[in-house]
Image (cartoon, rainbow, N blue to C red):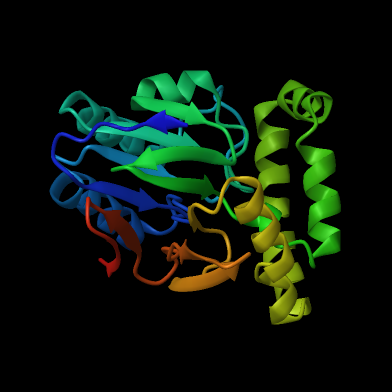
Length: 247
């Protein structure tokens, strides 16, 4: 279990921003968050899907990639540690972009001590086990050889594939029952049990809320991050509690 800094006594969690040059209003809200809300925090954890899609660290020509890197790097240099966990849209972010942005890459899941409280961080997609088609796709695409094959393609081809994947994902969501795109309760219980009944913070489902799960006689909190398609929001934790806030 890793410890995060505790100088100021507050840590922020965000995810599912899906930043793209096509959504300048949301980009602006994110930059406002970085410059005015997260400033002075001990740490910022980005739990996946920072970008709408990412085709590799060799394509940094988009305005949103460049400006985001600059804003995050400035925050990190001011004293806020930044941690990044891959999501289902940006799992190809690698060391180059992480270094430019002042981010430390972390594994999914990651168990940290948050002001003395064991806290498990996840993107959240692996909790949605009822979506069998997605889980099968995820298993295939996350294999190292599959990623190597993707990165070997020309940038222009990868851009087209990224756009196709985005369109395909949105189309698939419309055709799926709502319940299979949420977490599976048994999988949540299994994960909480495996990691010693911690607090859990995750995104992916776009259903921001605080839940309580009673597992083996223990009550565990589960916090779900908001997405940034409409307005945006975050979870902030201190020594006393966590809170879900909007932008």
